[in-house]
Each structure stands twice: as C-alpha cells, then as structure tokens.
Length: 338
Ligand code: SAM
Image 1 (cartoon, rainbow, N blue to C red):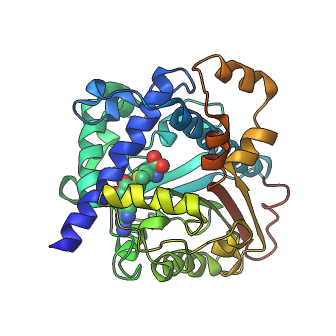
Image 2: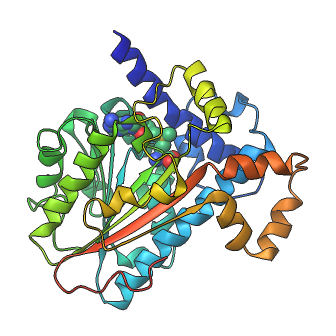
Image 3: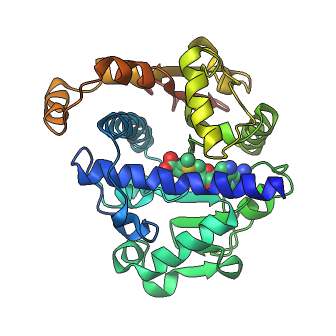
C-alpha cells in the first residue's frame, strides 16, 4: 500500500513540473504555446509560482534547450537524423517545440516514456488538442496503442513503462517493437539523445545505472552515438539540501536515490561509469551567471521583483545539468557538444 501511495506522489510531481512551466510562461519568462493543452484540470486556479521558482524554471529550460539544440545541430552537420528518448517525460512539451522549430527535419524519432497513468492522460490530452495532434502528422497516421496507454505517429511515440523495473522486462518490450512500421521503435542506427529531466532522483542509484547501461548495451552493436542529459538536485546532505529534502518529504515524495551524487564533482559519474568518453556538468547558478546573455538577464529582471538574490543563488547552486556522450565505432558526433 505504501508503495502505491509513493508512486502516486511520484507521478504527481509531473503536475508540479507543468504548473511551474505554466507559471513561467504566464509571467513571460518563457514562450510555450503547447503547455495549455497539457495542463491538469483546475490549473488556471493555481497561483503562479514565486519569482525564485520562475527564474529556476527559466534557467533550467534554457540550459537544457541549448544542449538539445546543439545535439540536433551536430546531427544535421553530419547529415543524419537523430532520435530523442525522454525518460519520465511527463507533460513535457519539447517534442512540439522542436516540431515547430527550424530543426524539425533533423528529428527522426521522438520517444516518451512514463508511468501508464501519466501516458494515458497525455495520450488523451493530445487526441483532444487539435494543435498538438496536427503536428504529429495526418490523422490516419496517429493511433492510440497499448489499450490507450500510448500513442504512435510517424515521429512521435508515447509509451508506458516503469523505469525502475529491469529494462529487459519492461523497456525492452516497449522499445524493441514498433507497432507503426514493424522495425524496432528504438532505432539502433540513429544518433540518440537520452533525456532524464527530474526523474532519476525517484530511483535508486542501482536502478538508474541499470537503465543507462541498458541503453549503452543496446547501441553497442551499432556504430552510433549515445548522448545523455540529466537534470537533478545534488548535494542534499548539506544544511540547505536537508531543508529541500524535508520539503519533498512533507509532500510524501520519498527520494530513494537521496544524494547519490553528493558533490558537484561527482555528477559526471552518471555517465563516465558507463564508459561515456565525455561528461560535464554545470549548476543552474553558473549557467545563469555565465551562459544567459546580458540582454536576457536584463529582460527577466524586469518581469518580477526578486528581493532574495542570495537565496536564489543558493537554490540554483543545488541543481545541475549533466551531459555526456559515448561514441561507438569512429563516430565523431561528440566533438564540441556543450
Ligand atoms: N521530465 C518532465 C519535466 O521535466 O517536465 C517531468 C518531470 S516530473 C518531476 C517526473 C516524471 O517522471 C513524472 O511524470 C513521473 O511519473 C516520472 N517517473 C518517475 N519515476 C518513474 C518511473 N519509475 N517510471 C516511469 N516514469 C517515472
């Protein structure tokens, strides 16, 4: 029973994530026309998030967008299509944002995985929204799969799986069969980017490393490239981290993977322990300081009054984006990524 409650709390973190994004969009930190159709019921009644959270959402979004964009650009330069797999995708809108960007033709396949409760809701929301469905292709090419827990289209695929289960039992069956054209859903020949945005923290370190290793093994036979981006909290053992941890606990979110990466320096281990040749990390504090342009900093400083700048820096210093790249064979996709 406890596990059921914990899982419900974990799935519920997706509502927090999309409401935070909606708040940042409403306050004009970000532009994202695709949030609205995916909002949970009653979302418009929710108060917007405090400025500190909006800024955090903005910095995280910009940082991850920049890395994904560079990945797509590298594929393009090599004349290849690429594949993106978003693990614990929740109500993320990234597919639609790419599909309406100049990079859309570089995207060969986009796969999203989450718990079946969440994928079912998302599949329904997509079907209901003309705006979202239209970007998936012709109506006859967009089909519900897995008894409504998933959705297939020429590029975009939504599937249910529990990422904590041994991948050979859950993910493998989902990713190795493609109801769309019979080939494996996860194409081993395409350069592939794995996205883990706010998800690995809900697993034990063993579960998350088993998951990443499964992908490494899957691509090992090909001469492709595997990239990964992880966004997570770290350093939960210091005094400030302990407060953040307690806040999550109060919302019944248990973190089994509590502080697997207690220090900034240890973050790239997420990837290097699986033989990724390149791995780097940056905190949101440093991304804001050194990668957000002064024009943008100026623009967002006009949006809301932030009087707790020190607290902002402290919070942002506990979140990091880590990215890594593994090449199989002599592929040179990694050169200059990040
Ligand atoms: N990645 C999205 C984003 O950044 O907006 C959603 C983040 S939300 C905080 C975490 C998501 O991971 C939820 O949708 C949750 O259901 C999903 N998740 C967590 N553990 C999972 C698991 N074991 N299997 C599948 N999905 C999982």
